[in-house]
Image 1 (tube, helix red, strand yellow):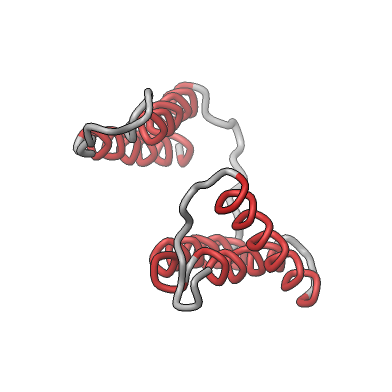
Image 2: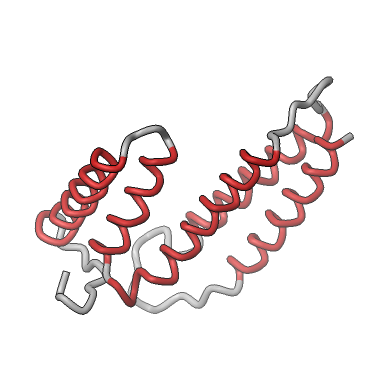
Amino acid sequence: MSDRIFAVIVLAIALAMAWATTQIQESFIQDALGPKAFPMLIAVLMAASAVVMFFKPDADPEWPGLYKTLELMATVGVLVAYAQLLPIAGFVLATTCATAFLCWRLGANGRQSAQAGVLTAVGIFVLFQHVLGVNMAKGPWGF
């Protein structure tokens, strides 16, 4: 029964996301797909997954315990904070912090997490900003 309740919640979120996607204003200069394609694809995949989960629930679902639930909520909090801090702190600093946290939660020690965060953020920034020519969010230090 819990799978079906979760499926209904996911379906409601997918429908809200699809509706919100239709509200995105398109500019006259854009790529062939436009800004609506990716969020609409995610909404459709979420809805399809929810329908499958509703009609084929797990016979004996195993939900995470309190510690894992808190860990998942902390991860969601970090990702929300990342999205909010990206335009303020800039891509490199925000991505370094978010990646380091995620690496730490996946089992790396503090030093490995920090190294992975810095290398990932700087590598992606250099690739997109300087190689591909995509403007990235620049923080107070210009990167």
